[in-house]
Image 1: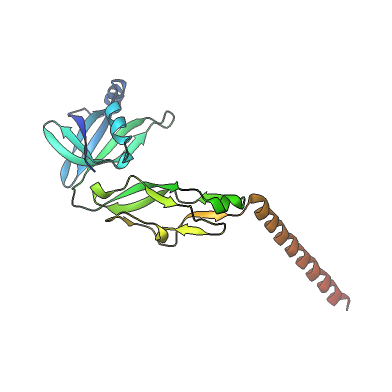
Image 2: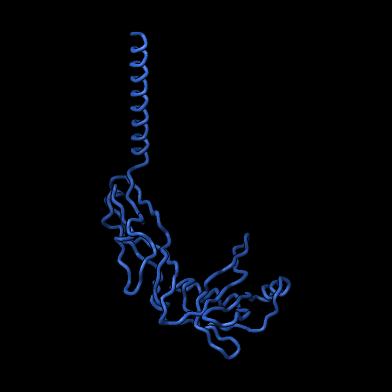
Length: 216
């Protein structure tokens, strides 16, 4: 994965008023840190950051931050967003090395069509939407694809069933469910109702037996 060049201005003043001024100018305040480097306060153009993180790699994009003559290889580790508008208001850039293994979160993407599930009027229930992985920065996948073409009702695809790219490991147990084929809602509701009715009949039978014992 080639890094994306992103220019960063160094020397911004701290404080909420300064941050508001930067945002009004179309810039996002941030900080560069990691690997024993003293934190560097920076500001990046909001549009450039948006373009950099909206590519195939998403927020796991490998960035080459150009800050006052110094180049930092980094990833956007944390994006703070406005609680209402959802826009980025601050970004933390973590310095990384190409040869080190780091943690990241990648989306889980379903591919294919679960024909057997649909023919049975069942539903595809995706239970895991993001996967915590470990890999070298350049090996972090844009997403992990799960082929559901062979999924059937009652079947479950688990983490241990996933095919991962070389050099990528998952920080979850193998038995964690990713996606399942579930029966139709009406059928499931009917089975639950039948079970409840059966339980009620058993309870009534037990009460009758208890009353018989008392009368005897």
